[in-house]
Length: 490
Image (cartoon, rainbow, N blue to C red; front, side, top):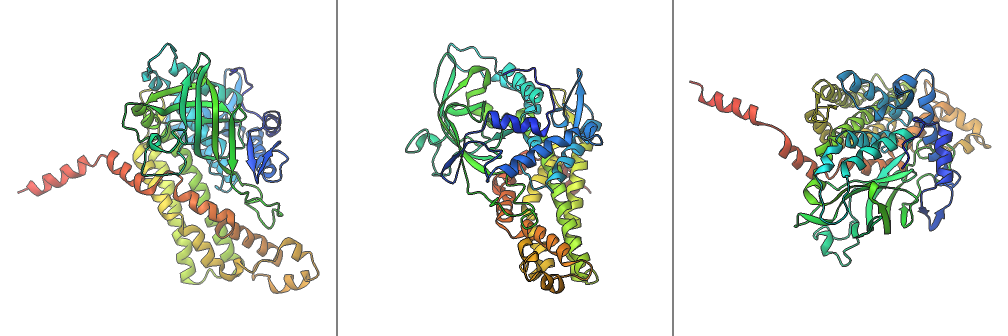
């Protein structure tokens, strides 16, 4: 690792890194030699490059970046010290989210929030003291890695869960103890790891951060499956098996989201990979592994990014829904107004939870202004339970119009004049109407939309487990005491 990076990078610099050190991706049975040119990943690479370029737009630079020691860094790496800092970070998250209409679930600023908080709370990892001859300063490793990622403006992916083989058994009880990612042995150079992890969303990245899973099911205090480390996405022995591509090379006018923002999902395979000691942050300690996100408050800063992302996404649904209503002149019907009102209510709830998380923020023990957990936990449980209504509302508002959509090639073909005549809208030309309805289709009915639908259900984790976690951590003592005092009142 080298800490002498330039700070914020341009889109072309990001693409140059991918060309020089391509992640080891496999798609449709073949190796992706260059993700910047492969048909399944090239458009996503260009979209990511555009996201990096936003940092250098004159009217956005001071929002998306900050200056320190003469260099500018992405705002999402900034350790907030005040509530005003959190507000600036929120603004930067939303600008980046608006770039993809909120449909880029794992844009780089998500993992930036993780490494920022983990770096600031690096002393948490100092508690990890594995037995053996290797004296590793895990806290310093985490601190240096966070600086390394910030200084080089890296794009990270991550993977948390074990392969879905047999949920009734622990990793050590599987037919092969290295189906789940585990430590094989230690060497003088580092640890050797073997196994797989799911889900590595956005594997088109510089590095993968394997942070401890928060639900490690092992009986012992020490476990080969408890670990935290980072490694380049093209490290020897690392491979990403991607799902079937959603971007199938269609014109962006026909597939406005899927042709630009198929961030890909993969499971990552580690075939006896050497992880240097300087890149190891935690080892063998099950309790520390399960509490790492909470112990550093990384979970709260990541959730804050996500809440702002979901606000942007809900705003996009509102914008498209109202645009449909405006185009076809249906705004005078009360049932239509009620459907738009549903989106408005969801949006304002999410915006209110973001404000509450920021206004109730406190400085944690590492000196970082940290958003309040209560509103963030409410958002993390509310949005997955209600998101499914958003694409449904677009379907109800657009009705058959979201199905009867000739392609751009059709509009330019022999029946183009008839398409212009019969598929115009009361307040829009056929071309403008079809572009809008194509976007609504890609948000609500396409394969891209289907993947988004499932993704949102499990974005924060299993909904039942999320509810249980909220029950366990939420402090209800004051309301309970108030009821007890009321019942005692004479």
